Length: 485
Image (cartoon, rainbow, N blue to C red; front, side):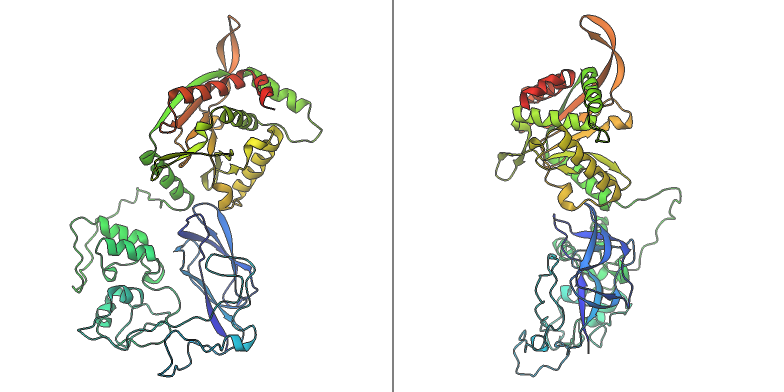
């Protein structure tokens, strides 16, 4: 018989713990090849197509489009090859637990050919045969089944619940004294999957059996546990009968609730952390950008036919890298545990980009080694990828300084929030004609407001003011950049 392998949501890197299913790329019954993308998910960083490391026939999918799954949750099952299932054959009573007879290896390629697309938790070679965990043969009143085990493996009096079972969680009360067999674990989602959820519940003394999951098939999510923690005056007593749900007041249909997840949730968490941990301060200055705009027109007029135009953002990015070379204190981060300021050798320049999915900050790697044309080309490439939802987590992380051009929204000034764990962010307002004293006379000039928010732990106001003044001088007299070319 074919071996059914379960493919779980892999660790997508960068500390991500969950992802939302955007679009399934395969149906139940489809034949998939090794490393074929099977689902498109949205993480807090980017849209990602997830390849399956197994080749075979899709027998089940877990999670509808729009559902949010934690890392390690089952995505789908694949029937692979035609081999004896090592976990279902009877085990001799004398065989040690966890020992495998190598039946999967003796059948040639066996269960699954190796995946060349490395996913965290899925190697490139053939997977090792799964080993069955040994469970107690029976549980009595004096030897109850641990709460964590019953919460993650709900079972009726017979001992196990099938993959499609819809048994309510309070059915676990009977299971705590029922015999537990050594049968194969059930396929599909179970009451609790995420170890973070179990840990959170354990820290707050919550019995997961008393929590109603809002995920698929009653899956208990982190938000469910957090809601239980926040319930004022509620005590959860292990072994007590589940209380009837309290009557909720009639919801106000005029109120709209939007889940803080995905990109919006990641932005909220990062900005909140920045405000909590970084003692920031802001300084700003108005600058006459007339000469900068004239220089840009000259560059674009003298460029090759059909060549890319030099953008204002590219010029400002080049000015930033020159300023950071003079004031390296602002290209750093703070190691709070070690109580150290970490000066970074290279400038990886982030820039804020507004997309349909929300605000993202792509990163131009090694911006200090690029000229205006190279920086501009990379900004254009990353902006297009951001709008198409093709940015990878690696392209959205690792920045050392951020440039935020909020002038595109038609505003003059702002107090930017630092992109944690960076040390500073330069904000740029709109460039508009304003009355300005130029060479002793009142004239109409192109004026822009520049604001710098900085981590007061890495430098004092003198350094921040010096950085901002240098940027303003380069805006007013672009020829100053010739010194750094």
